Length: 112
Image (spheres, rainbow, N blue to C red):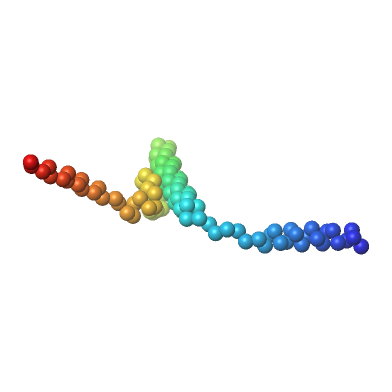
């Protein structure tokens, strides 16, 4: 009977460990996660832009090849223009520009 109790005891201990509560996520970890998500989203936009440019180049090459062969190319399907995502900007940096504080005047020297 003891051998049957050991697997039950081990299963109970593992179940208790599985239901243990994790500590709350710190603000620094949340900020790093948001930064990583923003960088990933920007990277996806850059990849999409590069793909769009490559497709435009391939389509132009196809049309030029077809015209050079003396055939008539079908009119191109209208697609939206490629949107350049620009350089990466951190999410917090773009929303709150920091203005330079004016320099404080030195105290006036007392005349003796």
